[in-house]
Amino acid sequence: QEQLVESGGGVVQPGRSLRLSCATSGFTFSSYGMHWVRQAPGKGLEWVAIIWYDGTKKYYADSVKGRFTISRDNSKSTLYVQMNSLRAEDTAVYFCARGPYYYDGGAYFPHYFDLWGHGTLVTVSS
Amino acid sequence: QSVLTQPPSVSAAPGQRVTISCSGSSSNIGNNYVSWYQQLPGTAPQLLIYDNNKRPSGIPDRFSGSKSGTSATLAISGLQTGDEADYYCGTWDRSLSAWVFGGGTKLTVL
Image (cartoon, rainbow over all chains, first blue to last red):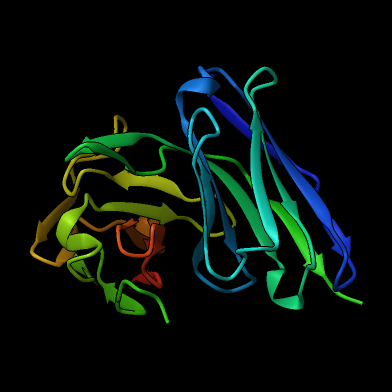
């Protein structure tokens, strides 16, 4: 069945780096946009980043722009996020999510998240 | 401060109907599809409504969505204790080139 499995979370000191992975199976990974969404303890959902199906477009939340890099390997059906210069406020459960597009007025736009992973916890603390 | 505004909490008795509002602007809700997500305690979010008012397979018709202008509404009828969860609206914001979520609404079934 269709599945997303995140890994790579853990405890990291402020200012250090961490790379999360999202292994996918059961669907044609290369046909979908993919997102990272995070949730700080006791807080709501916060979108982090999106990467287009072919990796040509990437967009980021202002809170992570310049520090996080989303990428994908379609040959391995895997999504990544490289997180640098980590801060305490980056502490959260990180979910990967599949995101179809819709077409409107000559452009494609993210549509919704129809498949989510279980999440991986990142704790930034000294 | 979320771009989309939801009430922090709503409550109702089993069997009753409740609505959750989601308010935005012309750059997000006003010109894009709205989706809704249910997050049961300790679990990942799940798609509940997409394209403003469509339900994925497996979602009961007790859940419905609507959109008017720059606001959207999730309605849940025939409330059950198992519906106790956090509910989030979301959409793409064309001005920000970013996905935006509401702050979430905690549903309590009394």
